[in-house]
Image 1 (cartoon, rainbow, N blue to C red):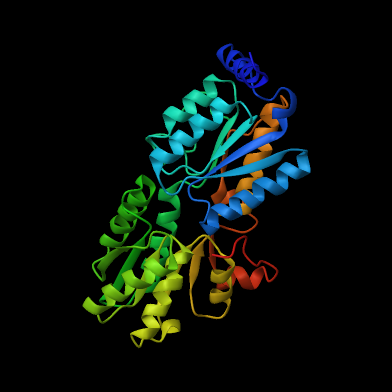
Image 2 (cartoon, rainbow, N blue to C red):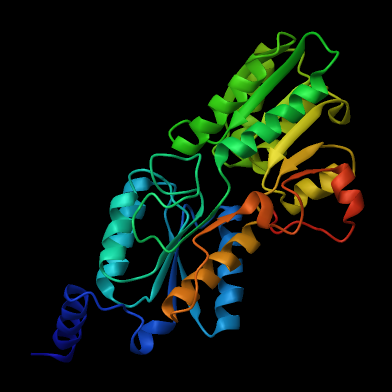
Length: 331
C-alpha cells in the first residue's frame, strides 16, 4: 500500500471514530467557506478570520461558494473528507439546505460556525437550530430590515406620496426574501408611502446600475432608494444621476457600512447604512472556533447588531460622533 493510501485510510479511520481533525498538523488549519469569494463583504469576513487566526497561531484558507448553494454544500463535504482542516466557518448561501452539511461536520467532531446568517429554517433567531453548532455570529435579517424600513418611515413623514424603490440582493435567497417581506410589511402600513418597484442587485454595482436604470425608465418621481447592500447603491446612484436626479436631495439607505458608504454619508450623498461589520464578524467567529478546538469556553450566539464597534444603523450623526471610523470593507 502506498503512502498516499495509508494517509487516506488513516483519515477515514479517524473520521469514522469521531476524532477531530485538530490533532497534529491539521489542527492549525481553518477553512472559510465564502458565499462568493469575489464578493467584497465575504472578502472582509475572510480578512477578519485570517487576522485573528494568525494572532492565535492558526492559518486559514478560503473556498469560493460562487453564490451557488449546491456547490457550497459539496465543497464542505469535500473539505471535510480531506481531513485537512480543524475548524470550519461558513457564510451560507442557503441557510436551510446547508444544515445537512453542518450535521456531517459536527458528526465528524469538527467545530463549525456560521457567519452573517443563522443556519436553520428560522432566520429570526440566533439560537442554535442545528445541534452541536459551535457558534452563530450574525445579524437577524428581520431586525436589520426593520431598522432600515423604520428610518424610511421617518424620512417620509409629512410627504405624500413618498415614492420608494427597493433593491434587494436576490429573491432566490431566503434571507433576502425575508428582508424584502419585512420592508414591504413596515412600509405598507403607512398610506403615504408607495413602493414603486422592487429590483434585484445581486450584490453587484454593475447589475444594480442596470436594474435601477430599468426602474427609472418606468418611474419618474423617486424619493427613496432602500437597499440591503451598499454595492446596490453604488450602481443606483450612477443611474439616478444619469436620469437627472440631484442625489443628495433623495434618501438613500444601504447595508454593510462599506468604506464607500461611510464616505458617501459623510459627504451628504447617501443617508444611512445598516452595518454588519464583516471584519469584526470574521474575527469573532475565528475566536470561537479556536476556543472550541482548544477546549475553552465558547460564546454560541453573537449578535452583530450589538457586537460591532458602532451602533448598527449608521447615519451622519453616528459618523460625526465617531470621526475615526472608516468602514471595514471597500464595497
